[in-house]
Structure formats: structure tokens, C-alpha cells
Length: 108
Image 1 (cartoon, rainbow, N blue to C red):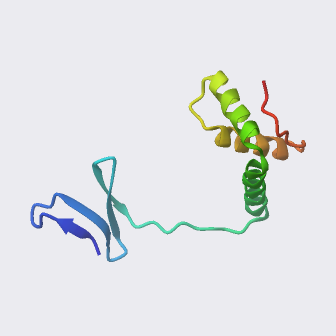
Image 2 (image 1 turned 135 degrees about the horizontal axis):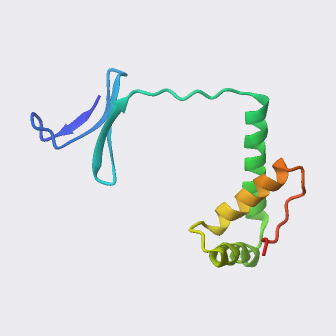
């Protein structure tokens, strides 16, 4: 059920009504949309992608703090607004999908 503040001339609403409409807000902007139920198909490609992602996160946690800082510095030099973690995971996944062995050192 939606939670309403300031009934009648509502100021804010959050939640769902009868599995049909969902009310919420994002950065102070109220929104409403149709209820959506995501599907999680278990295709071989999807399972493989999730496995690679899980491996990449695990490898990041295996890195030393200095290695993690190196990844952050590498992305800072490129001028992208991204964390060292996101850069590492991105490069790891690209390498795996290309059939290459991922590197734990950032590209120059």
C-alpha cells in the first residue's frame, strides 16, 4: 500500500497500490510507474556472465591496497569518473570475454 503524507492534496507517496502502480521518489522528484516484475532467465550465457562478474569481484578483494590504489590512479589518469573497482571489474570482464587471462596490473 502507498504511504501518503498530506492526504487529499498529497505531498509525497511511496509504495504500491494493488500490484498495479508504484509510487516513489528520486532525488526529490516524485514518480509513478506501472508495477514491474523482473525476470531472471537462467540461460547459459547469463550464468556464465554472472560467474565472470563474481570472479572479478573476488579477484579485486584479493588485491593488496597498493594494487587497488594503482587501479584508481590509472582511471584518474584517463580522466573518467569511475572508481578503481569499477575499472578493474570492467577490464577483467573484457579480458575474460575475449578469451584472455585478466591482468592484475592496470593498463597504461
